[in-house]
Each structure stands twice: as structure tokens, then as C-alpha cells.
Figure 1: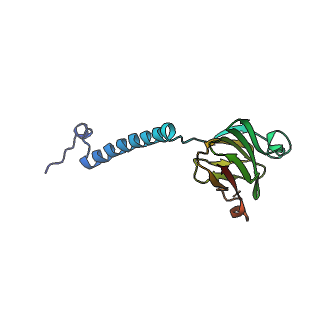
Figure 2: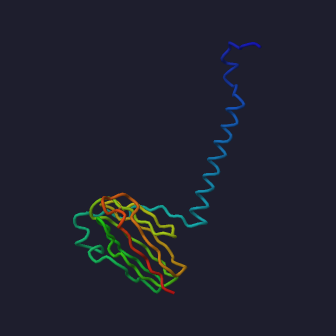
Length: 167
Ligand code: CUA
């Protein structure tokens, strides 16, 4: 066995083991890219974006969050403003007919909370000072619990509510 001292000859050499892992890495990046594309365009996954900035000290006194709850925009089209605070959501019960498309606007008047509606794609962080927004169409009648998903203190586990979808 000979060892080559010239670095110019060795510079192009890639260990086959290393080459295999380089190929696997590139394949994984492509697979993840395809997964994101399918989730976003075929399955309707949404990334919650900060919709609006608000002042957590005054948000409950003015604007739509002063009167939180459900508004009907058109038949089957709703928006709901949800105020979160330690340790409750206002409102904690929302009723819509089956087939409704509902846009949720959620903010916090104190600490960071989470807002996840079980059996839907809706799960978002609720940061004081910002309004988080996501939309879901309720195609099946039933009760959809929503829960706080960020630890926010002693009664975090008691922070929940439900969307009632009537037939
Ligand atoms: Cu609010 Cu945990």
C-alpha cells in the first residue's frame, strides 16, 4: 500500500462512505421539499402569520377584542375574535353550522398562550401584542375542543373551550 503525498491528487478524492451520505443528504432535502409542497398545496397546511400588532394593555378595551366572539360575514362564512388571558379563552364556546368556514383571530392580554383546535389544522402561538390568524372549514358536525398549548402558569391545564358544529 502506498500513501500519496501530493495534495493535488488527494483533493478530488471522496471516500465512498462519505459520498453515500452526501447523496442521502441531498435526497432527504428533496423529500422534505416535496413534503412541504404537498402539505401546503394539497393538504391545506397553513403557517400562522402575525396578522396585526396590538397593545396587550388596551386590546380588551377597544376594537374587535373589546367585544370578542363570533361574527357572521356571509352565509356559512364567519370570523371569531378570541381573547386569551390567564387562564381562560373569551369566548370559550363557539357555535357554527356544519360546512362553515371560520377565521380565528386570537390575541393575549397578558402572557404567551397557545391555541390549538383538536382534529383540525389549527394550532398557533398566541403572543401578547400580536394577533394570530388561521382559517378552518368545519365539514363534520360535532364538538371540537380547543386548548392552550403553551405553559402559562398554575391553571394552564384548565384553559380550554370548544367549537360546537351543529348539523
Ligand atoms: Cu394559556 Cu397555557
